[in-house]
Length: 163
Image (cartoon, rainbow, N blue to C red; front, top):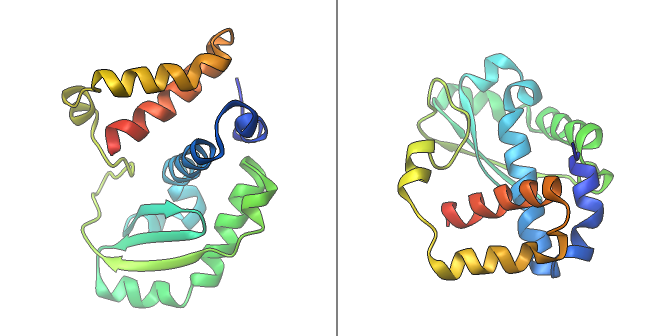
């Protein structure tokens, strides 16, 4: 199975730079969401949800003004936790970043997995023919590696369905 660091190292050779950046942003965001409780701590995870992560900008929803005030004092620690997470799981280039963390007041689902679309929403939303062709075109250079193609297919599918 491929790790994010393996994927990151070959992205630029497989895809144009604009798509590499989109894919890495998606990997970064999905990885943070999946491991949110581990990164921020279980108590804070109950009151927060990662909303977005683009490059060095991270938006976190907080369910209560009191928690938002408390979190404002922990930005440096949250930043260090995120950097440490990326250092151990992805690429050192992410772990060097100082993230711009913004808190917003919002609803945080009690069993949040951070997904922007539910599985049922994804099933209902279909890709149009042009989007399918674009995904196949992007995956053509790695068509002989089924495992890698599967990883990238899922990332691109999430990207197009979330758009």
